[in-house]
Image 1 (cartoon, each protein chain N blue to C red):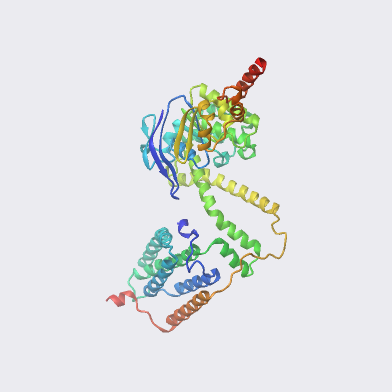
Image 2: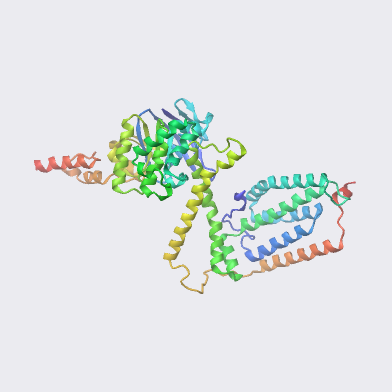
Length: 259
Length: 272
């Protein structure tokens, strides 16, 4: 699932957009997805993002992130269906499957938009965007370092797993509690080495005069281009449209449409 | 006996680490696998205890195909000491650390106790019995990792870069220990960059480059071959380099050990 959020260095019109604008777009999608409980607008919301994926040519990674999310989406559907069916309430004109379906679709839309954002925004750009939004540099740095170290830690976890398997650890064996306990020999070395690594990183940074000047300047500065203004306009229009539809137009449920 | 038949392996990232490797390691042999970074050494040895399964080809450990058995049952025969001891130490005390694998393999509690004592004694760690592994020094942690593997007495011991980060004295102790293990009949396989270490042990050397075996033979024969060394980006031991440079004096060029070199030079100077 993490693979589906990992940035790859390719160039496309989407990759070149200002990360702040992309984030605004994600927020708008987020807001609209939360505002609607009906299946139809959520399907629409899901579909209108596909062109973005295609333009950015990150289909493969995007599909992988959706695959990763599909398990949770199914779970959301099942839980909502169960609660709705056994004694819960749902709007009377809907069939019992429609509300759970909308809930899992909403989740997928959120995953989809965040996945597009992270797949097309490099950690460096993200940090720049944070900095230029006047977030203190310490926080920006901590954030980007955390993002950057995820693959490193994942690799280390794999090595540790190998090392413990070589000592006879069988992860998938035993009762549920035993299986949870099986992860202790992996988590302890991982945490210890992460702490050690962070101390080493701090020393290395300190010895290269990190934080010596209070006022930092950047080699690259984010500048809004015409394409960024286009996306801002699109996002705001979508938001207005979303609010208008929500408030003024009743949306037919799928069941009514089908019958 | 470990039999590797034309194996290929590609990591999920797409890196092709092994491109057709065949190798047979007999019982009681001492093998050093050498080569530059990324030559596929560690990938190859991870096939010996089933941590990795070949994409193509077969690996047999004592006639058992590694595809058909669990890592745990292979690990009982093939002990694997990882490069970085910090990747495996997690218990509260040193003795617990050694007992961990023994309990995984289902040894009786009585046996576990005696084996732990034996292993602590073997690697000179008895005084640290109740110490936390995280309080030990680098060299001691390395020894503890080794002890925790030797405790279950595997037939084959694989050591990944055993000499990295060790001072000369530790290295020499470790070398003697490994040679002794081999003398007691264990198959020892070590992955290493350290030519001086290999020269002093003089095992069978398997030289790898770009996912293939480029040479396989006696340490003396391989470490003194300049072309092979160049191909696998290793440098012959310093002693060998001196003798290769002194070739005009009709001195032998296949010298890899310091004490051997001393004797030859002494005889040579006496004659002059």
